[in-house]
Length: 461
Image 1: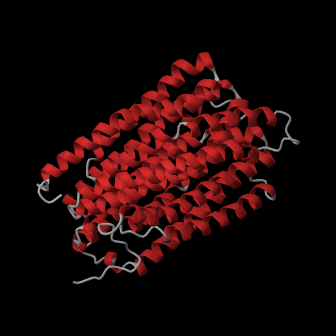
Image 2: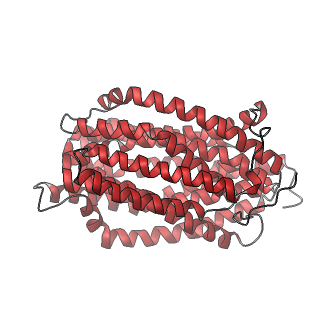
Image 3: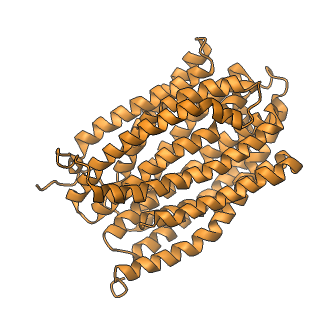
C-alpha cells in the first residue's frame, strides 16, 4: 500500500544544514522552554506561597525525577531513531512496524517504571538524606509525579516520533497549551486548596496527560505514514531487538547521568535546607537556559538519523558544523543574559520581604547559576556529539559518556563538597561535562569513519 508523506513531515536529507537545523531547532526550543517554564511554575508558586522548606523539598526531588523520567524519555527518544532512519530511507513499511512495536514496548515500560518507583518513593528519599523539615514536601510531590509517568512517556514518545519525521512545530503547540494549564492549576491548587505541594504535582500530571492525549489524537490523524494495521501492531523479534538496542542505551545514558545528580543532591541535602533551596532556585533557571541546547541535540538526532538512513554521511559532518555555529552563538548570548538578568530570575522563587533568609539564598543561587552558564560550551558538545553518535546507530558507545559525567559529579559530591561546601557544588556539573567531552570528541570521529567504511561510501561522499 502506497502512503504519501504528510505535509507535516520534513526531509532533512536535502538542503542547507544550517537552515534546516535552525528551522527545526526554533520550535523545539520554544517547546522545551515552555516545558521548563511550567516546571518552574511549580517551584515559583511553592516557594513564594509555602516558603523555603517547601521549595527545598520540591527541589530535592528534581534529581530523582531526572533519573526516572530521564530514563523514560531517553528510551522514547531512542525508539524514534529507527523510525527516523526508516523515514530517511523511505521504507515506510518498516517505519510502521517500528511504531507498532514501540507502542507495545512503551506500555510495558510505563507500567513497570510507575509501579517500582511508587513503591520505592519513601526509601529513595530517605537514602538521599532528606532533612525532616523538607521530607514531607518531597514525598507528597514525588509520589504523585511518579504516578504521572505513563502520561509523560506517551507525550514524549509522540513528540519524538513527530520530530523523527521532521515535524518539530506541532509538539510546541501542545506544550503551549499544557504550560498555560499547568500555571493556572498551580495557582488554583496551591493557593486556594489545602493540597499544598500535592497541588503542584497534580497540576503537572494533569497538564502532561492532556498534552499526551492531544498529541496522540493529532498524530493519528495528521500522519498517514504511520496509520497502522493490525499486522503492524504484531510484536516482532527483529524490530523489538533493534528498538531496545537503540532505546535502552539512551535511557541508561540519562539515568547514569542522573545517578551522579542524585549523589550531588544527597551531598547538598547534608549542607542543610538553605543551600538546598539556593541550589533549587539556581538550577531551575539554569535548566531553562539549557533548553536551547537540548533542542540542538534533538535536531541533530533527527538530522543525523535521516541522513544515515539516506546514506549521506558527509551531511552528518555538515550538521555538526552547523549546530556548532548555532550553539556557540547561543552560549555567548546566554552568558550576557545571566550577567544582567540572572539575579532577578533567581529571585522569582522567593519573597524577600516575606522570608527572612531569602536574600542569602538568592545570592548563593545566583553564584551557582553564573559559574555554570560561564562553562556551558562543554555541555553544548555533549548534546551535539552524543545525539549524533546515537543517531548513527551506536547508542551503546554513548553510554560511557554518561558514566564519565557520573564520575565527575560523584567524585565532587563524595570527596570535595564535604570539605569546600557549596562552592564545590557550583563546579560539579562543569567537571562532569568536561570529562564526557574528552571521550565524545574522539568517539564521534572514530564511529563516523567506521560507519562510512561499513556502508562503503568512501567513493560517494
